[in-house]
Length: 100
Image (cartoon, rainbow, N blue to C red; front, side, top):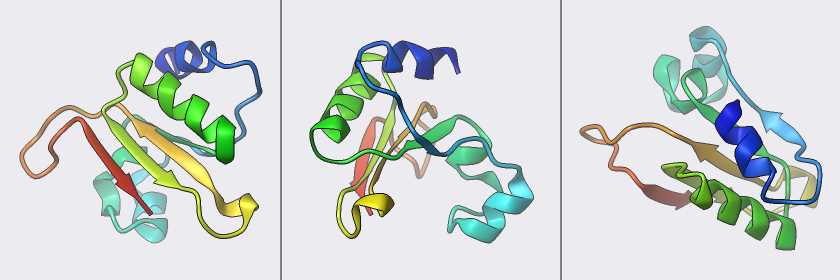
């Protein structure tokens, strides 16, 4: 949370959290990453789009988040930016950026 707050401090608007920490059982139900995905460790999804999405991405980069997932298509209510701070492990190179 400290890293998220430091990232948030780089912007001037509230961050609507779409998803934060999840227990392994719930993550297995809602994510393809199973019981050990990023949200079971150190990840957050921020519900933003457009210029605000750009600011969140920059803030995540300034605070050395290692994973950035970007969904900016579809209805505005379904757009978000994912940030996580996972380490570089085999099969999960970091830093890494992807789109949904």
